[in-house]
Amino acid sequence: DLSNWVAAQRRMYGKLISGKPGKRSFLDASKMQRLTDLGFQFRPRGSYYSWEEQMVELVKYKEENGDCKIPVNHERLGSFVKLVRRDYKKYVQGKKCGMTAAREAEL
Image 1: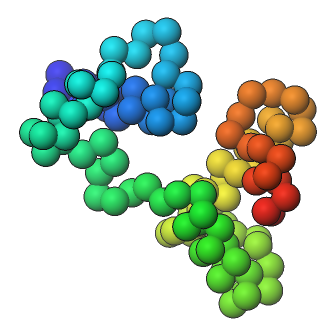
Image 2: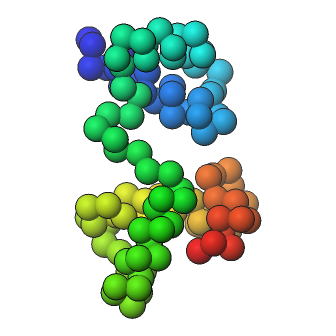
């Protein structure tokens, strides 16, 4: 159905921009452009914040609260912190993830 197709497009987009398109990604630049021309939103409701934007918010949170003990249900930073913690764990174990040495240094 349509909702599954939309979810699949967004998933492929996420993998494509993260540099991990996978073997079965059928989304390419021309298809993305056609969807964008139709008004398709790959990231609905402005739900995406860049690493840099999230780090600014994290620093602000620490200044206001004195720590980075952010609960997973925090409106803005909860998901970000959850993913960073997961990626850091994988990074330390030598597994593939979004964490890099530069990002680790920022933390």
